[in-house]
Image 1 (cartoon, rainbow, N blue to C red):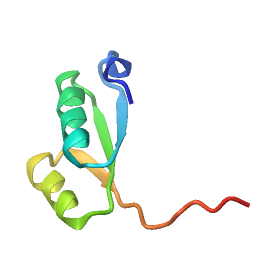
Image 2 (cartoon, rainbow, N blue to C red; image 1 turned 60 degrees about the vertical axis):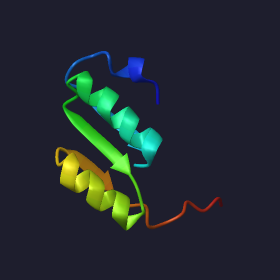
Image 3 (cartoon, rainbow, N blue to C red; image 1 turned 90 degrees about the vertical axis):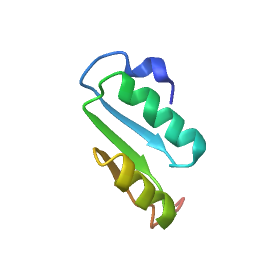
Length: 69
């Protein structure tokens, strides 16, 4: 994801992961007043961190792998 893609206010922005790079991206996206922020994370500690400090961000758990048919 590129931060400049969030230049339109009120857009939905998604990011992959909630590690150090993901948190930095989350903060940058928040500066753009993004209406909805979605993270994809499977690590429970990181999910709890996001829920505690960034309650407006929605986390979608990664539980299944895509299977190529």
